[in-house]
Length: 196
Image (cartoon, rainbow, N blue to C red; front, side):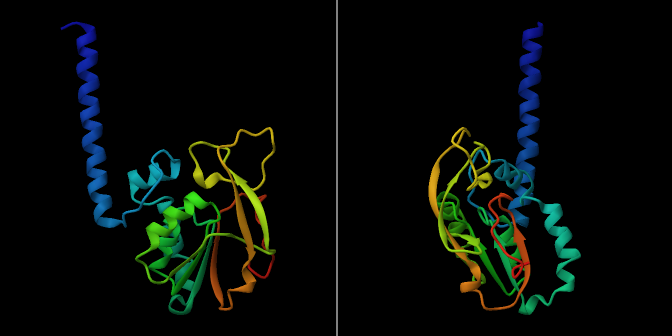
């Protein structure tokens, strides 16, 4: 057997082993996690495909430490920068109500699809802010839809620009909030101390 044939056979068996391992991960994830619609080539989606949940260790750590100190039966959680709903769906099994905010129109479509059958989730297609205004959002990394920002320059490589709404969340959340997850571009955050 020549080297070219050996290399070809090795590649074939390596591919088959990887495929088997990925199939086993898939089968375990189907049993243990909610199925989600994802962006195929987004880095967050890759982690969801491999492990069933993005930032699983972080979320489980919150559940075993912080959430034990909160009256979850009467608590509201805000998910600011909800993306496709990974954290929102996790939070829904703990909190009485979740309010999830995602301004990006394409990402919001997946958030809406992923949360449509969960009754304690309320989704909003605008960014949470301390003022009402319109803004332009753009993505500067091809493999991170959630990495969109309202702060970019004309010299940045951007992949799609959208006009989005930012709304003052104090105007429509009257209940007591016990937990806030904020995952937005730090320059995009326009929240004041009444939220934190």
